[in-house]
Structure formats: C-alpha cells, structure tokens
Amino acid sequence: MEKFLQYDKLSYFYQTKESEIHALNDVNFFVEQKSFASIVGPSGCGKTTMLSLTAGLLEPSSGEIKLGGKKIEKNDSRIGYMFQRDHLFEWRTIWQNIILGLEIQKKHKDAKALALAEELLKKYELYGFKNKKPRQLSGGMRQRVALIRTLVLNPSLLLLDEPFSALDFQTRLNVCDDVYQIIKSEEKTALLVTHDISEALSMSDKIVILSSRPATVKKELEISFEGTTPLKKREDKNFGKYFEMIWRNLS
Amino acid sequence: MKTKINYSKAHAKYLKNLKTEKIIIAFWQIVVIVGFLGLWQLLADTGAIDPFFFSSPSRIFQTIIELGQSGTLFLHIWTSLYETIIGFLLATVIGVFIAILLWWSERLRKVMEPYLIILNSLPKIALGPMIILWVGSGTSATIVMCVLICIVITIISMLNAFISCDKDKILLMKSMHASKWQILFKLILPNALPDFISVLKINVGMSWVGTIMGEYLSSKAGLGYLINYGSQVLQLDIVMASIVILCILAAGMYAIVLPFEKRAKRN
Image 1 (cartoon, each protein chain N blue to C red):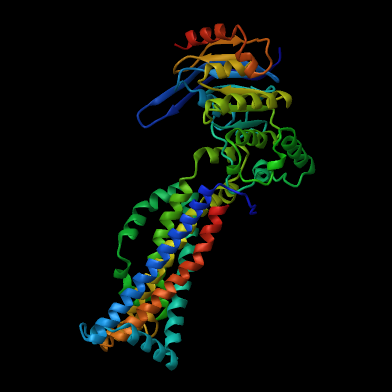
Image 2: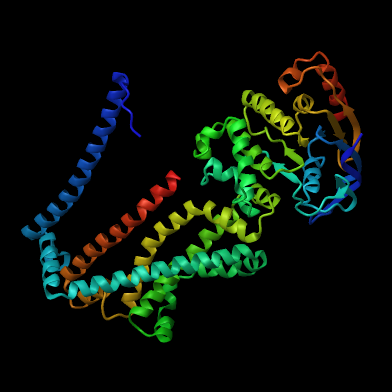
C-alpha cells in the first residue's frame, strides 16, 4: 500500500482576538495514489482548515503533510483546488477561463499544455462552448469547466471543498457523477471535504471521520461497492449500512 | 443574430403593447417640455411674470444667437468644456491609481481610512480661497477644484469595488500561483469594471459641479463666469442661456459614457 498523501501528527492552532483555537489535534491518515478519499465531520470541526493546510495555503503548527514522500510547500504546484462555487470569471470566455492557470504560470504558449486543454474540452463535451461566456452555461457545465481549469495544470492531487453544495439536488447527482468519472479517467488522487454523507459514500474509496474540535481522526472506513459510478453506488444494498455507521460516528 | 420565428398572436400583441408604451412615454416627455416652454413664453408675453427677472424662451434663444455671433459664446463653452474634461480625466486616472495603491497595502489603507472619510465629508468649496492662492486664479484653479470634487468619491468607490472581490476567487488565483500583479490585472481590475463605469457616470455630473464652482470663485471665462457675470449686471437672459447650454453639454458628456456601460453589461 503506497502512502501517496500522508498526514503525520498534524496539529493546527489559529488565533482570534478572544483566544487561541485548537482546530486540529494529532491527525494521522494517508491516501493511496489514484484513490478517492473523503473527510466528513461535524460542522465547524476544521474540514476546510484541513484542505487549506493540504493546499499549502496554511502552515501546520506541528506535524507535517507529505505528498509523494515530499513535504507540501507553500502554494504547492502539485495540488489543484476546487471550490464550493465554480468561480468562473464572467468576463472571460470558457476557453480563456480554462487557460487562466496556464496564463498565470506563463505556459499559455506551450503547445503541449494547450493541446491538453483542448483535449479535455473535447473529451468532456464542452468544446462547442469554447467561445461562450460562463453565464450561457448550466450549473453542471460550469462546474465541469472549473474542474478542467484545474486539470489543465496537471496536478497530482485534487482537493475538493464541497464542490457541489451550490447546485440543486438533481444537478448535483449528475455533476457528482461527471466529476467522479473525469477524476477517475484522468487517474487523479482526490480528497473531498463534505458534510453530505451520501455524497462522500458515493464517491470515495476511503472515508475519514473527524471528531469535533479539536479534530482528530475518529474512524477510517474503507468503502467498497459493486457499482462503479456514484449513481450506481447509491443503489448498492450496503449503502444504507455504511451510511448508518458513519452517521453513528458523527453524532 | 435575428431569426424570424412565428410566435403566437399573444406574443405579437405583447410586442405591440411594449412598443405602444414606449411611444406614449416619448409623447408625454415632449408634452412636458413643450408645455413648460409654452407656458413660460405665454406668461412672459402677457406680462404675468416679469421677463426682466424670469427671462423667456424666446429671449434665451435670442441671447444664445447674439452670444454666438459675437464669438464669445464659443470661448466660454470651450473654456468650461476643457476644464471639465481635464478635471474629469485627471480625477479618474489619479483616483483609480490611488485606489490601487490602497488595495495593494492593507496597512496603508487602514492608516488612510479616517482621512478619506474626513476628506469625503468636507465641502470642497471651503478650500477655494486656498486653491486660488496656491495655483492662481483662472483655468488651473477650476481644474483643481474639479479634481478635488471628483477624486475622493472615485477613490472610495473604486477601493470598495477592489476589496469586495470574492475571497475565494483570490484564493483560486493563489492556488494557481498568481503573483499580486497577476491578481490585480487578471482578477481585481476586470472584476471592478462595472463599478468603474458607475464612477464614470457619477464623475460626469460631479466634474461639472466642480467646474462651475471653480468658475464662480474666480475666472475670466467659462459658463460659470457667464452666469456670475449675467447675475451681476442683472441680465437674467445671459444666466438662463448659460444654464441651457450647460444642460446640453452635461447631457452630451453623459451620452458619451452611456455606450461604455452598455458594452460592459454585455460582456
């Protein structure tokens, strides 16, 4: 078992005017390469703090996070971040949105990178919308564009911060399916943070349950279903059993 | 791209109603101005109001023609227009630049905050006498007044637009390794475009206020000067004629800014 993403005795404190808050306490777990892991936990337990630490946007107070055996640096380029909302720039076309990261990293004239962008657009049925503005696309398509914008930079780890919470239920199930399949077919390792148990269940190979603050790993759960897509997994006979187990650990 | 589609009769009726409504509004707009001018003229002609104090549309028209023939009218228009446009451009460019500086440094922003608030609430005309002492009377004093009136609101509005940018969007840029310059040019500035357009619209009005105020204080030419002169020699025709021209110029400048707004909205 290769420990691709590894949390080692991770602790984090943050300061407010009133006090010092102990957000994370001795968090230890790992995620295998090309697998999909989810973090669930009671609200306010520090799930998003975990992602910010993993993305290198925050520094751990103690302990460390390693990716592929190497410590995560500030704004680590091996990591792609997907947010709650798609945050597409309305003044840019879909194509311009997708190559935003390439522009920033001055790779927008790199033929290989551009070819990858085109390929992803074609593969995920967005090529025809290349020159459209984001507001002309549906919520699900926008979220797909946001994912491709991240994938174009070729990250080895994808962080997803409740990426479907802004969508209505029906769209949510479909987009969840889409995003899952894109991540799997691009062979990325993914770490999802969510408060939605069924969402975590339908996408993950492993679920990490955090306790309330100061958060620590309460339980790790390996998930295996017969179905291969989130929608199919939701129909699995063991789905309810897992759900109940997680639910009990959360409350 | 306009394709002809046969909609139902109800839709045709709806479109027709929209059109009729537009015509009705335009009609009444004309009625208001024609009625106002007609009534004014009538009251002046019948002696119900004294044209010496109230002037009349025909006398205003006459005055504009006379001023035009003597050539002084264009000098006044040109002077005011020049002062307003220079003041408008300077205030907008310098104001946006200062707003960028304040966005860039949070510390500078916090230091400057109370002073901006004081400057914003200060009636800028109070600085008039000092401006004249510092830059001399005439065109330059008027331009300074114009800039002073526009710049504070420009800074405050643009700064608000810059700092109200979605935090997650900035985080997104950072997660892609954007430098502060890149965040500024690729996110903050384009994101603030709609606010910039409204600042332009506000500044069109404010810069005319600045110009007229500046010319009241001290000037040898300009529409503000003409109004002041007219009232001092008790020639209300000149005052009214200047105001009419002022209305036309201000509306014209506003009309130049409007297409920018339409374009920004389409994008």
